[in-house]
Length: 172
Image (cartoon, rainbow, N blue to C red; front, side):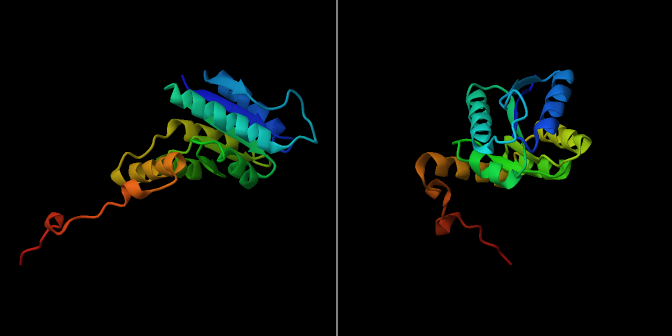
């Protein structure tokens, strides 16, 4: 069972609650991190950080967990969520963008605009939580580089240089 941490600000509250209901009906373990009621004066940073932290904590505990934010300004919430070490948030306007983010950087927080159509938002959420990281060398290496930078502040461990004897020689 996949755990989905969901929150929404005033700009995405209705869609956020609709996605929460659909995810519960589909059998997911859903945790709501947004306000109990629509609040026109709320701000996205607290919700973004709560969702990002909950996802990272669950993934660190080996749980299959993702985050979903539905907000008025997705780009801004992406910045806030990505302040949580280990969170890899991305904005997605379609299932294809969500799939690319999961395959390419193992994104774990999906950020949707509050003006999204519910059906498209749902399809995007499902694509996001069912797509796995592409375990080819390049995407895996890039995720490790991001993790190294978060933990050590460098990407030096991946600046591999080959010695001359390791370089393949082409014979005519």
